[in-house]
Length: 114
Length: 114
Image: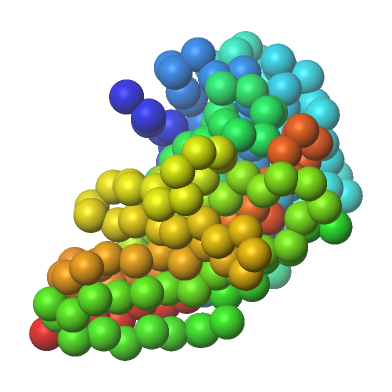
């Protein structure tokens, strides 16, 4: 089973709202990732967690706040977003950060900021 | 620095014909190479990867890819295309031993004509 589960699938939020995206995997993976993808573009890395610790932040604005409560869960807290933040947000995981490991992606959460 | 190039924005192939989606890469060390497919409104699905060993790698859904070190290429191939293969394909590279983030190409849209 190589499943990464993301909720919600679709989210519409106002620029003053606070919401969260959730991600879960039960493959025992110790690296988890958040990516942002705009239409017809490749995914862009936002954050990497390794063994529940934040190891990479790709200079993401503070209105995006990641959290890794345990080894199976990854959240992305959203606050005061802008319309240009509308995108597909992909969660992913891999056994660890080693380069040879496959990164497995979830189906994504479609975010629309109005 | 790592980089990956997918020279074609779109590839059109008639159903039943062989298909090739091109990818070239640049890394300072040994490359780890990946192909992913993205169907409309879905996440990325892992197809195959090259780490070491046999230069011809077989993956999901009948796809295969050939690693060519001298040409720094990792083209994706399938002997007989299906209409259901129509999707967006991403080549990606990681540099061995550096635990760096995965670098995606811009993507190639594959359109199989019935």
